Image (cartoon, rainbow, N blue to C red; front, side, top):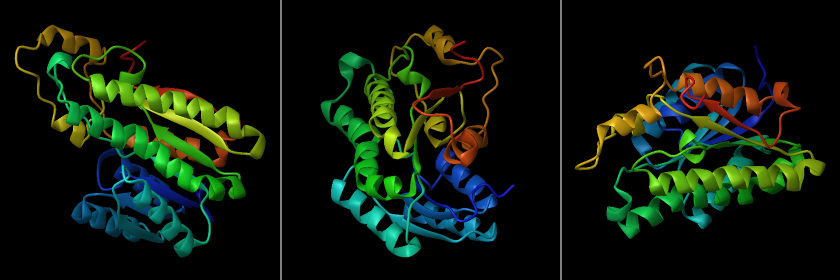
Length: 250
């Protein structure tokens, strides 16, 4: 299936996890890709993999929390490919803290990447996306839909991403833009691998954020939904937040 033939997609957070899996999925379906992340080495690995799948791609190191860097990345993508059909905002960071012990600099850094970065990239890309009647797929989380312990900053950022997505969907629907959010949970990614309980945390609270079958699945399960929402098959889906969590919040 070549749903992305002739399409150009910019993916943030492309060096690993859901970002890399999304790049591989869209590349396998004929899309041209502009790949963005802070980790230069892993980003090059993603670019190499995308080329092996036969897709045209270019990678650029970029801190999405820097508005000037975000604008430069979008400009570089348009210079390289001439247009932009879809923006997948997948870059994100997470730390676990008791809220009363959460350092202010950690709070600000998480929001600056997860929420501000989503805004900066989208604002920079909007003129191109509107010209193409394209779409935005934002990475939210089940942490933005229900209470998750020890994730105050992350949850706040993802709740903001959801609200921002709904606003985009309504504000620009008359100009042909679609905006949707994906809410993963219980997915194995580098963020998941770094999970460490804060000192003194009640382990029983973990059951609240675990799938009922206790199976944690890979990032490809999320990438398949991102690719669907970014494709023309999702032409009548706008302003939606879709969970990929194995039934955790059901």
